[in-house]
Image 1 (cartoon, rainbow, N blue to C red):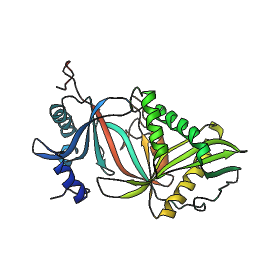
Image 2 (cartoon, rainbow, N blue to C red):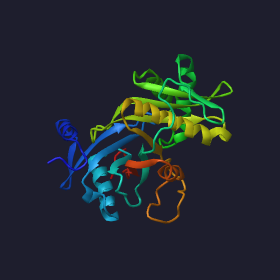
Image 3 (cartoon, rainbow, N blue to C red):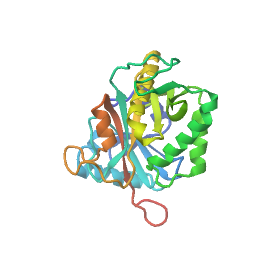
Image 4 (cartoon, helix red, strand yellow):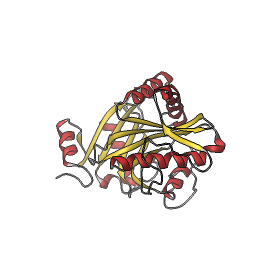
Length: 286
């Protein structure tokens, strides 16, 4: 039987690909891959039996099982639904959020000029080089990958620029480009089968204009998604080794950025959690 929250097509395809693994009697969808920006070997768990996620002892047991099953991986990354929070020592890796507010801007293709004079317009080919630089900067800023290989970051940025469904919106102040929002308009979630417009990155250079420009770019991005009849989904990267905003409370692993989004028109869609896997000194986990 297909587990809750997973599409039948994904579950069938995972089984055919040999990605449905038994971890001590619990079905999981898991596989190894090399993280493209750092080269780190990781195991990705797109589905784990909730019995392995619900308490501290079970979550520690999951890490041990993954280390045994994927001895070459140095980091485990596990997806959970929005309502499930993994206990320490697991920490947030990537949070996907969906915009639930309404756009006030017109659809893509029409200049959007907020009251403070920031103009939002669709990018053209002359903007591609600057957008690529912003994307590379965003990869380095995220910090979740540890040491990001600059050449890999540049290659990945060019792949995004070349994607046929990529749209970028440019924010200009007095005619000068100060930031962007880059969207992938044919994004999809293989696990649950949903389709959406992915807000891949927003970056604004002048700090003093960041708040107003971010709001304008999000609004324009939502207008693009509305025009396509799809939800707008973004993500929050949680860098490693950071001090979290809240020292105590129901979710100590949330960041200030995520907290802010959840109070300003976004809801949590799903989360990826991470935990380093122990190594035996020969390149394998123990």
